[in-house]
Image (cartoon, rainbow, N blue to C red; front, side):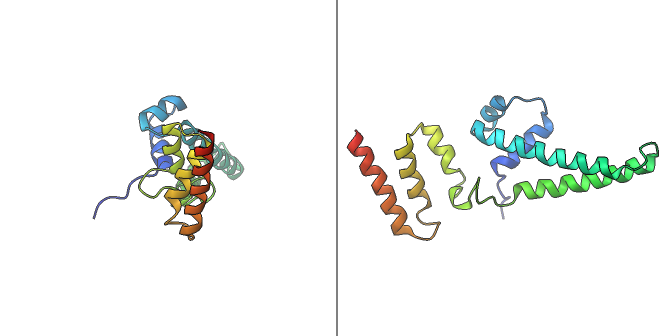
Length: 153
């Protein structure tokens, strides 16, 4: 059995762990992902770390005692593990599973091809037609956008 492919967000987080000073544009180019994906993953990482640091600061009651620092670091490390797992969980708003079928997110393909709104929606509805529930309706929506594009041509 093969290894499970890492999501773009997981690859971005892993890259930032090794290269914390990397610029988002450079990360997007290096990992072949959209800059939006990099900014989103980075903001989620920052939010998770801010929450961890806030929780750790509250946990330290006597900073002078080394044992409290150790306990706090253990708690923070466990929180990081939980946060990392949470960030890789399914995200129906920002990264719906039916948009990632085939290994690439639909938005990444649309942006890479520089498609306009109507053509992007044609691609979106076609790629999700077999994965969201109402195939005929999605294909009709794709056709509607395609007909509008043909009228504008």
